[in-house]
Structures are given as C-alpha cells and as structure tokens.
Length: 331
Image (cartoon, rainbow, N blue to C red; front, side):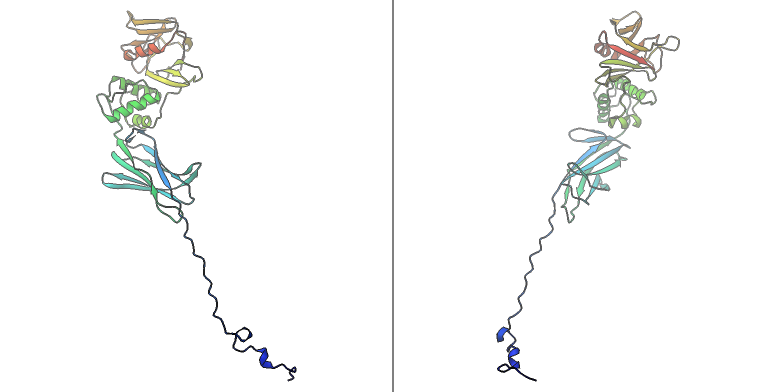
C-alpha cells in the first residue's frame, strides 16, 4: 500500500481515545424535571328536599310518600358520583348513588325515595374523593315521617302540618294544631275538589298530596278579576283573586225540584243577621237566590235554590263579598 509522504496511518487514529488524543470524559447525566402531582379540585355540597313541608328544624313528610332529594355540588367536575346516605335510630338504613350532572351553577345529583318508615331520619349527600375531586358532603337534613291520618279530636304536629298545607292550597281552615269541625270542613272541601269520598276524615290520600302542595281548586275563570265561583258538580264555593282560589268552602245548592240557577251574576243586596227562614248573612245575586249560612249543609244538593254554606263560614264569606262583585255558577 502506498502512503502519502509525511503521513502515517497511525496519525489517522487519535491516541488515547479522546479528541485529539485527550482523555475520555464521562457521559453527561440528564436530570428529568419533577413530575407535578395531578391537581385535585375541592368542592362543596348542599342538600335540598322537595315534597313535604319544612320548618326551621325539621322537614316533614307523610309515611308512604315520595320525596326528591337533591345534592347540589360546586364546582362541577365531569364523571363524579354522589351518594345519599339515610340514617335512622339504629344507624344506616339505606344508600343510593347518582351521577352528578352539570347545571348552570355547578352539579346536581337527584334521588327519588319513598318514605316507608315512621320516625326521624337523617339524610346526608356526600362525594367520595377521586383523582379529580376531593371528598366533601352536605350538612345533615332531618326528616320526620308522620302518620298520614287524622280525624276529629286529634291534635299534634301532623294536624298542624295538615292545616298549614290546606291553608296554603286555599282551603278555609283554622291553623291551631287541633282537628276541630273547621278542619273537617276544610278536609271535606279538599276531598270534593279532588274527587275523593265526601267525608271530613284525613287519610293518606289527603295527607300525601297536601304535604306535597297538590290538590288546589282550579278556577274556571282565572282572568275575571276578584270574583266568586260555584262549581255545582262538586258543590264547592271559591273566592278567586289574582287567578287563584284564595278561599274554598264546602257548600250545598238547590235540590232537583228547586235547582240553583246557572250563569254569571252580580251581588245586589246584603241581608245581615239571621232571617225568619234561618238564613244567615245572606248575599243575593239574582232574585231570591243567595249565598247564606244554614244549619244543615249536606254533601249533596239540598236547598230551595240558594247556595248554603256552614254558619261558621258565613260571616267570613259575607265580609269578602262586595256589592257588584261577580259570581259564576256553573256545572
């Protein structure tokens, strides 16, 4: 092999292995940046119960009724689940799970539960910790499940709640916590409104809708201003204002041989006190036809054409009727 003058093959290979024959340096180690832990979002939860009635301390519902428990969380994080825990005197009674769905203000988990046991229950909605969101829970809400029945002579919280519910729905009722004749008349009016048996006893079929704010009288002429309506088919008198029945009363109209007239009329005369026929606080709307108190007000048409109301209700009805005010009498 030929070599160029002044050049050796050894010079082509650096001695010592380093650049230009220098020492070999150790390989440089690469330091990885620290991995930041995934950020966990904190949260908060509130609890709301729909169905039943509430006071400052307790929520009340009738045994056998359904209520909706809503857990509202913030902020919303996708893929999270809430757990409703129900506790009784002996500890945990039941648990339900529901997905937290997004709303305009955060998240919401809804639980529909049927209250089958009487007594005091404690409800909590919680979120267990996940990789995306921490653990949090609502304050406990206490629910008193009451016996859904009452009759003449009963007294207590369940009667008071029934009366408050009836009053909120527009039925004329005293709110005393005692089941008196006025409460029986209001329950009878509620039953007639909703096609139930015509008695003054409050069974589960009364308690359940009343505590859920259901079963109000719906006026046929809600846009007629302040007026009265008599529904012949249900034998009910209603004082309507602002499109709502504000006061609803049990009443009785003319029997088949002396029927009540139908139509739209205006009150034209008031006769205070009791007349010779036993009519109390009479308010005439056409001819000799009037709304008045009377000793006997059965659950069926029984008068000579007038609209009878119980005497204890006659005075308050009289105070709420003005001359010239309209009344609609219809089937």
